Length: 119
Ligand code: HEM
Image 1 (tube, rainbow, N blue to C red):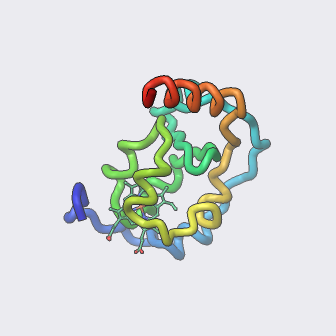
Image 2: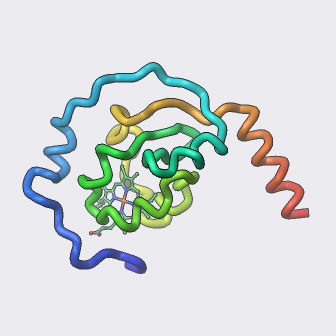
């Protein structure tokens, strides 16, 4: 697979079972704009299917390595995610990292700018 970090191996315990048993205190879900997600690139925020996740704790558990997933922090990673592993149930795996959703206004703005670009 392209761009794969072939030398990456999970450190001991940083495997799928380790991730499943890791407890993360729940937070109140909020609405964020795409701009806000971008501002939190360093905090490893990512949009997947209009949900906002803080992937800080997940990064080192990612079976594909940290480098490749980090590239999409601050962005909408949905397309990249689906290109690599459409079969992975991220809604289930990342439930405890969800911090909010993308605000409808922000999505409309994106739709409008895409529309302008495509026409
Ligand atoms: C959005 C950017 C992402 C990219 C570009 C990406 C890329 C990759 C790649 C290349 C692999 C293959 C590793 C291998 O075959 O050894 C992989 C595996 C995997 N990734 Fe990601 N990933 C991304 C995000 C995520 C996220 C957010 C999750 C959280 C659910 C995730 C969960 C997984 C899982 C569970 C596997 C193993 C899949 C399997 O073996 O069938 N990935 N990823």
